[in-house]
Length: 407
Image (tube, rainbow, N blue to C red; front, side, top):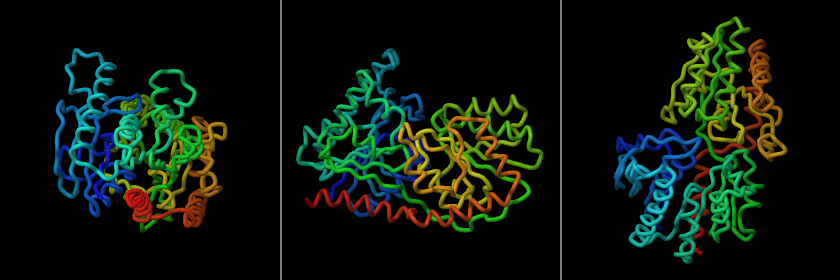
């Protein structure tokens, strides 16, 4: 089948497109689908540069659309320029509106040319997806939602015009909506935002099985944090908690932070002001396959994500039989309800955004290495009930897509 994927240009893809070699640094949910789909079907991809957002930054500064052929990927690729397409005299908000209109027109032109049998678009392009359902009612159109962030949560009751537009767009007559089970309560959110008769699937992501799992605690204990360095990922909460731990814990310890984002400098400055910067190692963004290697030498893995804790980085930690510390379920927001169902008492929980409680939980583990091993062993048993490989996970999604074309 001829598939057209319309997805935001995620920062984890930018370097691959610049180097013309497919080696993504993030978003395995999308790149694993791209990898498999491009091997078995005629696949085209439109990356839309969004270059905006409170928790999203982009290094894609090109002011023209480009078509690419890149090594290691059998797909036609087009990258649509973002706000940099327009002269700098345009106010940013105006440029963002014009960007979206222009990208919509370019997508419609491409659909006319390529004549896809299926269109798959991520939630960042939901408005484009909605308009395409009106223009091409005979083409199956699938929407992909990678979890419910604070922005998507806010559209339900907000009176802001932009939120109302997005809420209206989600009410489209889509062939299928596929959501990621990331602990964000997406299954409940779907019930509020989608048409009742729209088919929907909530799928837990896969993992690459890690071998050689560390089951011995060395004298120099290593603590790992992986994720975008943004407020909703809790990087500042984590750094403050670790600084508090370092002031009272006298034994050898090292902290690895993998990820980049708008709070990188703030996090580094906190470490410098406290005089403990030598204990921290900030690796910024590294190829996704290399992240897995760090799990093998980790004693304690910490997540501070407030939007849900079945995210990819945490699933990889689970796959590695990590000793994990994660936020408690937020029952009032329906966040991490499913996370607790899966993990139960195999991980250690702390109060959301509570620096003191997080530091206390870290100290609790550091002071007794046996506890670290016990949590690792318990998680190794629990994960067998729900974890699956990326191959199994992507095969399931492709089967859904193929079924829509065969109808």
